[in-house]
Length: 405
Image 1 (tube, rainbow, N blue to C red):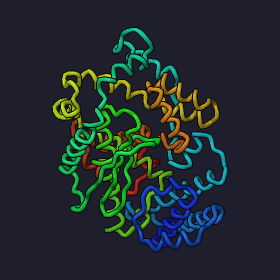
Image 2 (image 1 turned 90 degrees about the vertical axis):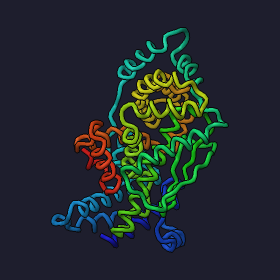
Image 3 (image 1 turned 135 degrees about the horizontal axis):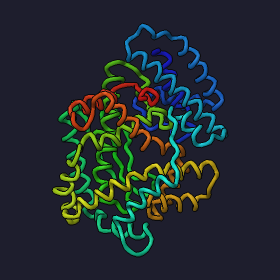
Image 4 (image 1 turned 30 degrees about the vertical axis):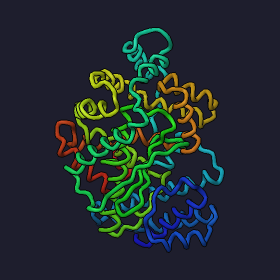
């Protein structure tokens, strides 16, 4: 499979010549990138060559091989099929939201009704009893929990230091691992990890909109420890350097790998801060650093926990908008009504839909699939050591979405 793997890497880089968002990370031989740029393959050629590789891969017999080798074949197969689907989309093929999600991410997104979100919203309404619209009351309440821009770096640095320390208790990271934090603007996302290879990441935090206190730990864990930075560093260490499986030196964003990446990054928040440990850490450290009253932490996180249950409303808005069932303004209004997003945040999210389309499923569906998979294997809240063990095993493996069921 090594030859197929190398050709797969080259095809991913070739798609990247047509799609600037496709190659999320690459730390393989620079000669390969240069050769791909020089060849300038058309989408039709990329698609044809990918189908040839799939046929060759289908003839590789791994029935008597160890599980990791069988998973490797499955990984390459799913990633190549996803690549073909992305090429078809770039070539003009229109796919409904659910079909696209299945083709790109090897997962079937669930559907939710207004009624399901309405029940959660009624509970929020009770917690924020008062006059005016619910979104208005929610925005007013949250105003008191914005991290002042002058304190953002201090708060975020404290959060990432804590996430890093907690992760290193259970996961041995490469000795050279490191990261740089940058604060940016004019992005459709709130945070991003750009993995550069050799266990080094650039973590970017978007400051276009107000950053609330809960985002400090969310971003620190998701983009850093034990999220994307750790995921990529472990794949590089175990797959590329130890096994010499070159397919892992490239990360195509619109692929099944992203559901694992985003799902583990979100679940990593729970792994690093089980039970009430997040509340206690933030109340004692982050709230004071941000100049926010620590006595309000418990109430804030009770509300935060409830509103988090509305995350799938974002998927429904994306489905409706991308399927042409509502306008951009209507999608933003849906997010305001059912996800309790302020207007500017809702409009930013619609821009995310336009740029990344069905990618939105990877965050919440990915979280649910990863959590259920690890808990079925004994990694529950009452057994944190086992939870970390299974979490690390998943981070360091070629297992993909359909393998989590």
